[in-house]
Image 1 (tube, rainbow, N blue to C red):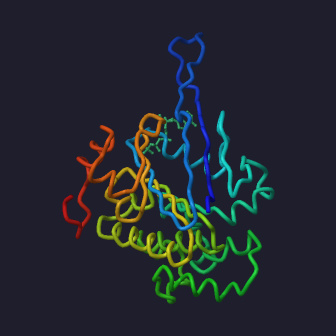
Image 2: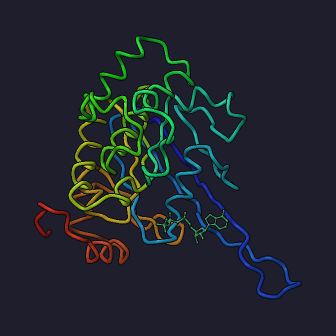
Image 3: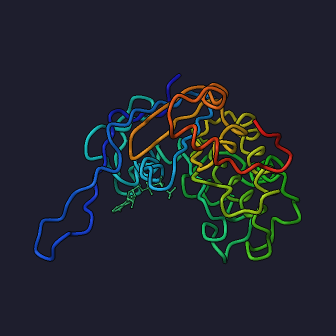
Length: 264
Ligand SMILES: Nc1ncnc2c1ncn2[C@@H]1O[C@H](COP(=O)(O)OP(=O)(O)OP(=O)(O)O)[C@@H](O)[C@H]1O
């Protein structure tokens, strides 16, 4: 079953003027991108810096609207709207940010952070029980539930962010470079957890990364972006072993080895 789709999405931004009184040139940052995420699927989006990955996520999350094309969830068009109006969509599509040092409220305990979307999105059910279940799912010691984020390591914070995103049982979890702010050994653990916990919770995953090895560890399918265009997509192993685009070949060459991972 197809859940989240982008059809022909294009995004343009004005860039710097070349002359003080000249017209502002417009840059196409995403160019007619198509994407479809099905239930239970784990899609990686890779590309170099400036390829348009974060812009694509902003469109998929209805934070920004595409200039042309559209985003749909279960066939229903999704566009940025007043906060209350997208509640149905926020329950279905949740987000894990890149930096767990910035994305968690410093004054809330772990328990309150994980419970916040249950409260804000009015998710029915036994909330304390769901929070305990999530703490177990992301393998956080229940003793940490009363701590503030400042008393947690980077990896523990990212586990909290993951538990919070999974709390409303989203159909799709979207993660933007969720390991880039973490130390190398912790990265592998978080990637493995992302894979395991999305399978266990029945959520599809969209994972943005610079690094094809990270996507290979967590995802089944990959889409390669370059200068706002999809240059290649397919099963991760196929792209990894027989890349068709120069960009995918370069990304494979640039792979920093994850600890415990053997070279191609
Ligand atoms: N609000 C904006 N206004 C103008 N230009 C923007 C805006 N947002 C993004 N861009 C430009 O769009 C291009 C793509 O940016 P984006 O952040 O989507 O790339 P990315 O693939 O996520 O890069 P990175 O891996 O470095 O985060 C960049 O050249 C960026 O400068």
